[in-house]
Amino acid sequence: MIKCLTIFILCLIFLGALQSFAKDDLLTVSKESEKVPLVSGKSISTVSVCPEKSVLLSGGGECLGFLNTEHKVVLTKSAPDPVGAAWNVECTNMNREAGEAQAKAWVICTDQ
Image (cartoon, rainbow, N blue to C red; front, side, top):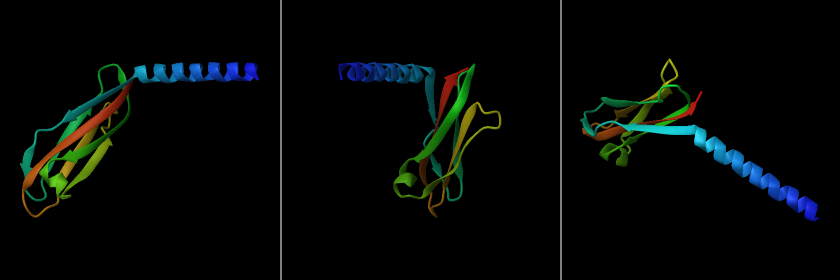
């Protein structure tokens, strides 16, 4: 029983060390656009870029501002660029009225 418990504890320590090591290799970079007034149908966009000599793993984005609280601004683009080094985000005003909105993009990168 003690042998099984010892092996279990060693496995937990090993897995914890692996998890800690993996987190150290990841880097999250975020970028926000300015808050701007958007008329109906217009968009605002931003791009978050991985640092040099790193590789894009994933990314995402969100829309912020008054139009977002009214559920009238829509995330119309959230995708990597063709090169795979940045994440593009675009938010579009779907309201009939103008309002303030902001786009936010982030990337998760790792060293090569």
